[in-house]
Image (cartoon, rainbow over all chains, first blue to last red; front, side, top):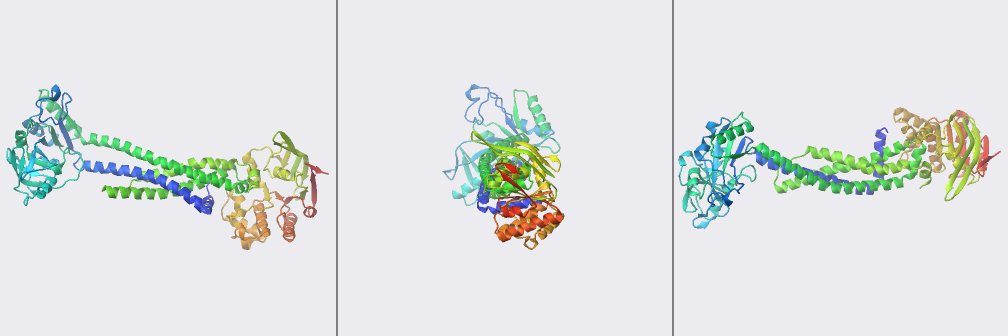
Length: 410
Length: 221
């Protein structure tokens, strides 16, 4: 079967000859392809979005966490020793941690942190949705935070009663009537802290294991002293330029092991987490695509229906063409071309529709819209496949018509 | 050029076998103008389908240009129809979506020939049947006689060795039918094209050089 421009022209003309039916079949295909494209595209946008938040901190960041020997839950403040009796490994000491950059050449800087709990209040009123955390001066840079006003904690603030607050906490203070943030006093447990700075707002999500906007930062030495059962559970480390994350991790592992005393840490690098996330996102996108495919099948059945009606209506034409020398393959090809053209036009409209829909979804969810070329390719490919798959049976029926019977029908 | 020997055709309708052709033998020479005449039901349509390679005989031999053709496969039969046989039907059978020119070009399309040559060839044939000024009209814009002229141009376009016309004037009034018959006679006389006309009308049959009369599935001597 050869495809001539005249074949395409004729196919287009016969589709135009029954506009209503063609349009109805098109709607089915447009919705089918459109929903697949929209689903896949939204999946991609969500994936890009979370990765973007994730990568914002840089991929040269390792998270070092204390390994819980007995599998006990994290955040055991208030429970002396190991909860449930399982022997927790001993926590790393602050000086051990601060020595990591000098002992491991692959690590440029470390930012240990300690989380605290307790009632937090300002001017006698309880502050909701905020939590205290003891950090070092390096914390600001490693976590890619910036100051909105005042200054961050420095190494000279050891044991001080200064604090730096996140933008959410600042807003909360202002709501409670603080005229000036700097100098305001916040009570954590039994201690009063003076605000010396406010960090800029940070978008949610990403690799940080805390919510920067809701934090009240103290110096880590203060935190270790005032928080109940405080111990350093999480360290963020920046890898030296030119060192791979794996090499840096091995150095830290070796260093921690050399300390003896049964100390152990779990180190996660962004690649692992990103790889994990991408895998999950792919499953998610696949699932969305599968849901969209159901409507695609419905659209395909619509194409098949239109083509079957078309074959029945054009039996005489088929007979004439056969008499004039058309082979079975020519007839089959003619109807296949029609259904493929129908599906491709539907596919193109569906791509536009699907991308438009995903743009709207991204717009309202405040995600960054991304045009997914693989989704477009998928749309073209799938609509072609739909045309061939659902057009084949009607085309075959047409080609198997007996020329005499076809000629006699009206 | 065309030799039928003892062609039989039977159809099974329900439990009974109906013999439509009961041993037709017929020889037609190159350049003849023959009519096959008979009442309806005599089997002339079945015979025409077999000569036109749209149907296969149950038994017998059909030689076209010296080669046995009846039992070839479907694609081969399509090719022979395309290359060597031109059909003219009672109801013209033009495709309504196509212009006269495009209708004439159809047999060439199935030869894979759609270039400028084919356009010129089609125009030449439209001119031959006096329809060149209507080349871009669609069938529903043409009268019955004009449509039949376009159909004849279509039958001629592929240079067939045989024109097979099934009641070509059956749907036309006497005057127009006469013009169409004149066209067949001219084509036959001037270009030596073999024409076989199937008809029930003795008036049409009389205009042909030779008449084969069919009755009850056989050709009456």
